[in-house]
Image (cartoon, rainbow, N blue to C red; front, side):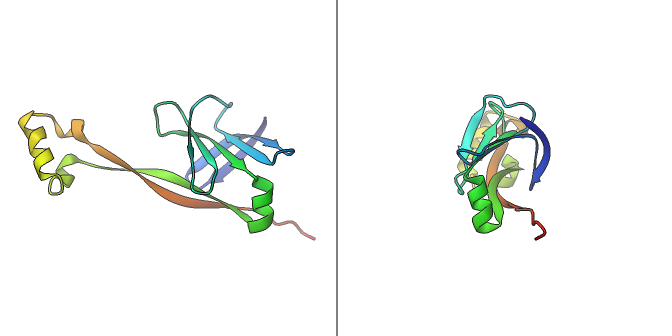
Length: 128
């Protein structure tokens, strides 16, 4: 595992492993660890710390092939956005009224959404 400093959009990785035989790039935050994986639309896998939205890894299948073909690597990553129950009250009229009847504080009924964002990591150019 090699120490690196790679940033792709909002994600930063400090360790990398590259399996040249299979053309698979593994990027990590810290040492590799078990976690939950989610496939991106491009076919990469984002690794999350268990039970969180914290990205701790990225696996890129065909990394060198993609960079040679496209000159860049695109990765769609989710971005957390949040809104309160009060802000959604007009859309959730009956549901929100039920929460009010049970006297739940609005902080207990916050909703979160993941929106995909695409970031590209361009291949480095080399002088010829």
